[in-house]
Each structure stands twice: as structure tokens, then as C-alpha cells.
Image (cartoon, rainbow over all chains, first blue to last red; front, side):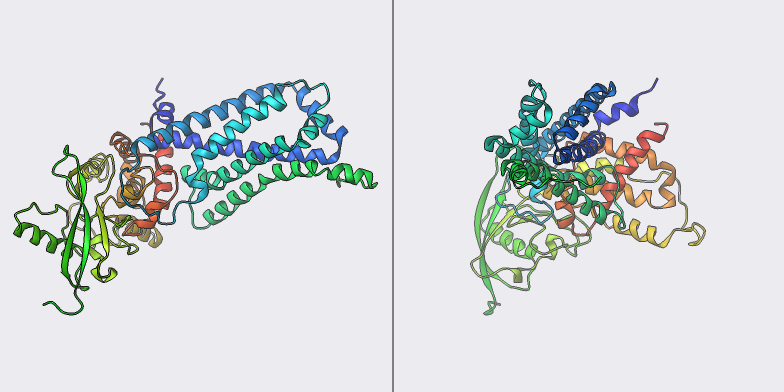
Length: 227
Length: 255
């Protein structure tokens, strides 16, 4: 059995980049679904908890979780590997160096935003995943969102994610060879849109930090989500 | 000779006696510079004066001095190939500078292109990549009848644009990661786009990428600094094509 073609995904520069790109796109897709789930908070405690219960009672969920972990690890390993090689081979020692406008804030900070996202993820898992869930998921999430410290860290995490995706989404398509005068402008705009959408996490947390839901309830208004 | 338009500049240039010697920046005053001179002619004048003083001239490479051969390549004041867009450094003229300007001149500082002497670097890594697959093996014989192999106009244009690469190495020198993927992408593309390159497409993509990896270049992180400095305006779409050629060859060829 010849598995050279699998080995090349690990042993060649473009192979590693392709693994990083595919795993990155999958993670980006996951984040969009995650954001959609967070929007369920607006529908109220019963609806949100019902959705979480549905997820947790589904026997496929643990498998998906392991799969997500695998994708994440693949993204981290290939990303770190690519960056290490880049670090070792980068041109060094220019007295003066001017960038010519190709780099963006997003592209130049990929490593730092990656580290930020990873650090945030650890905090996220420690505060939401590996804790006592007896108070109910809605209560757990909204009470966290009423803590200024938590929300500050949460916003920093979502901004790092937005910056990371501002370069990452369109970059993944280029790495996979998708570059076409018709589609590339759409892909670039779409990538930016996904990146900006990630600030939605921050906005949701600010909604609860400002207590808008409580004020609305006091005033007799109800947030109604159109079915 | 010393017309009122002539001026003088200070050139801060990288001096390095040999591949393993330590190098340093050395400043020289170059007087009597005409605004009509090319940048390389200004260096020629500097070298003349150094020779007259029995000092070693500043080694730098140039050949055609008309922007088509890819031999010259310097970083001038932090700009790869100088401040003019989409041109080689031999096309830079002294009218871009003013009296008393301090001009920093450095070689490509790329790990895969070790400095041989002063501003001269060893770019044979690019040649070795070409030898690994940047060719077609069929005997082409005499020029065939032009219409015997139809080529779509757009494809022919794209292939020609990729073939405009002169292999100067500016893409690598400007890359934050020292990647050679614009060069490799152009070389793979120019043949992948044309029917004559067809029979060896898969083999070429696999072997040229393998050769590229072996030379110790970085990886492309799609920041497109290369496209911004390329004197021949080679597009990063060629990198995407290389990625496509490589990934498809890996998945679907028998290699």
C-alpha cells in the first residue's frame, strides 16, 4: 500500500498549508454555527436550555466533539510548523525594510491572534465546559456575561478571532488553489464578512453586561424572536 | 562635466569579503552624480574611485541593464529593487535622489541565497528548482506550424505573463517568510497553461515543490508582498495555480 500521497500532506510545504487551510475553514464554519447557537440566548432560558439538552442527549455529539478537537489539533500543529519554518527562513538583517502594502494588520499578526485565541479557548473551556452545570446552561452563560472581567476577556477573544479570520478565510482559499478573477473578490469580501460577524460574540456579551434583557423585562417588554 | 545639476550622495553599502566573512555597512561619498545616471552607473563611479584608491570595488551583479535579465537585485533604502514600482534596480535612476541623500544599499538577505561577496548572492537554488522540473522533455524539433496546436487566447496571455518571471529573486527577498512560491508558481504555471507542458504537469508540480522545500525557503502565508515588488508583475494567482497543480497531482496522479 502506497501512502506517499498522505505523507505529502505532512512532509511538503503545500501539503501542510493545505491541512492548515482545510482545518481552518472547518473551524471557521464551526464558529459560525456556534454564534448562531449563542443567538438562541435571546429566545430565553427555556429555548436555550432545550437546545443544549438536545445537543447533549444526542449520542453523536461526543463524536463531533472529538472530531472538532482533532481538527483543532491539526490546525495548531500545521500552523505552528509552517510558522516555525517561516521564522527559521525569514529574510533577516535588513537595515531598512519597507513593506509594500501586501501585508495587512490581520496577516502580520496571525501568530499573535492565534496565541490569543488558544489562550482564550483554554479560559473558555475552564469557565464553561469543565464546570458544574447544575445551575443550567442559560444561567451559567448569562451570569458570566454580567461579569465585567469575563466580558473583557470574552471581547478580547472575539476580536482576536475576528482579526485572525480577516486574513485566514481568504488565505485558506488561495492555499487550496481557489483563485479566479470572478470569485476571488467575492471570497475576500466573504472572508471579511465572516471576520466581522465574529464580533457578534462580543456584542451578545455586551447586551447582557449592560443588562438590557433585565431592563426590557422590567419595562414589560419581551424580546420576541420571529419563528 | 561638473554641471550645476550634478550632486553628491552618501552610499551606505554592505561590504562582505566572502561567504564566511562577517559583513558590515560602510559609507562612501559619491560626488559628481548626474541625475541622468542609472543607480548602477552611480555604483560604477563609486567603484572607479575605489579602484583608484587601490581599494576593492563593491561587488554587485548586473547584465542587461535594461530590466529584462533578472541579474541585478539590490535592496535600496529598504525597497526591494528600489523605490520605483515594478522595475528592476537597473532601471532606477539618480533623479530619484537629491543632493546629500544617504542611500542604504543591501543584498537580498535570504537564507537560501547566501551572500558570496558584498551585494552578490548565490541564487543557484532557483536554478536547481528549474532543473527539477521547469522544462518539457519532448524534442520540439523545428518551429511547428503555428495553428497546428490551438491555444486559447486567454491561456496564452496568462502563460506569457507567468513566463515574464526573470528569476531575480525579489519575491523571496521581499517575503516576510523568505518563500519562493511566486517564482515556483510562475514556472509551474507557464508550462501548466500550455498544451506542450501537459504530459509532465503532475510530475513537474510534485518535483518542483519537493526541490523548493529542499532549498530551505519559507512557506507562503498569502501576504502578497512578492506581488507588490515583482518587477514583472507576476500575479499571486500563479501561487494558487501551483497549489492546485500540486494538490491535484498528489491526489490523482499515480506518483
